[in-house]
Length: 225
Image (tube, rainbow, N blue to C red; front, top):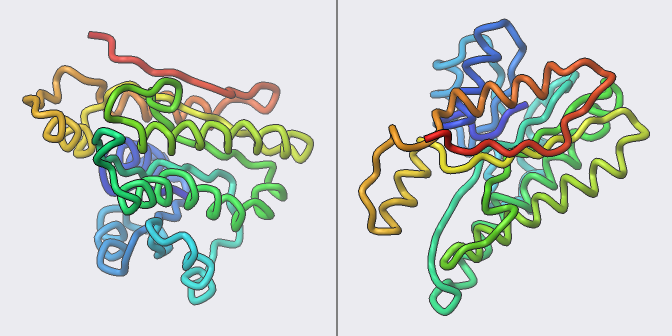
């Protein structure tokens, strides 16, 4: 089960797993996006629900067929909206907290029973901002700091059930989100200066494929240039 498979890191991970024959369930925010993902990844299933409105995810899922088996849950979707604390509105705070933190918690709650059965793996794609906050990154960083806390708590709760939990903290990665960040910062965007999403995908797949005698808890990926 993957969120954020439409672009950036999520798309790179989905392509990697699809190419090797893994059975994919791809989250989509609406039916139109689900149709696009199904066309891009033949054979994959889709699950529709708006991460920006986590209160309604239970209702949305109750009207769809959930997968019978879930071996891994990959939280890769995210949103960012920069701005000084003095300017950010409650709407901006809520949007980032809903998509980046509350929705992953709600999705995990829904799929945790199946993950316990399979002794599965939950991966949270966090951010360098989940470890340190810079000026004008307050809301995004707060959501990602919260995501770290969610992962750490979940790991402690589910270790005895055999569920592995990994947080990945990529530095700036070439993606549509990074292009938006540069626009908000008023800077020119050069994708070649930042991490290739495929490199982050490699680290995520490595964590997934690690033998059962080990677990990657936290993994930081920084630009090599």
